[in-house]
Length: 130
Image 1 (cartoon, rainbow, N blue to C red):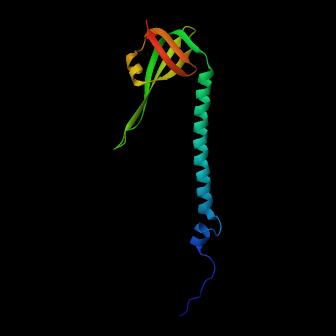
Image 2 (cartoon, rainbow, N blue to C red; image 1 turned 45 degrees about the vertical axis):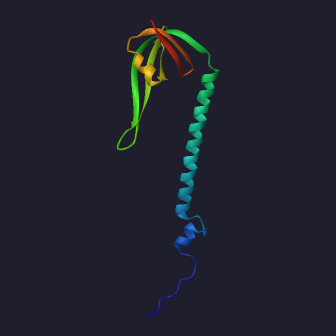
Image 3 (tube, one colour; image 1 turned 180 degrees about the horizontal axis):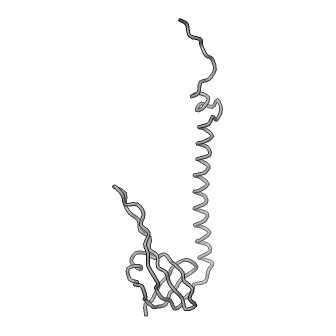
């Protein structure tokens, strides 16, 4: 029995070898654009926050440590864990702000501590306990 010969590009040639984008080509192009867009958005947001902090005045105000918290990521299996430290301060006007600190500064503070807080925008500078 003779089988008919089918001429023209097959699925693989049409999809991956330039015969047209095909469904997979369009999907991967959109995925690539989305990932690059998210990367640009994150970098832009970080630069904007850094610029706003630099243009903000450095303030030193009496404050109280209201609460502390941590955010830990990773650490399952062979991956390492990363911990971010936050402290919420309350100033004399009653306003509260949560600032990110390094682990050493975080460990030196306790809930209820009173002192002088120095910050610039959302950037923590120091806290002198009284």
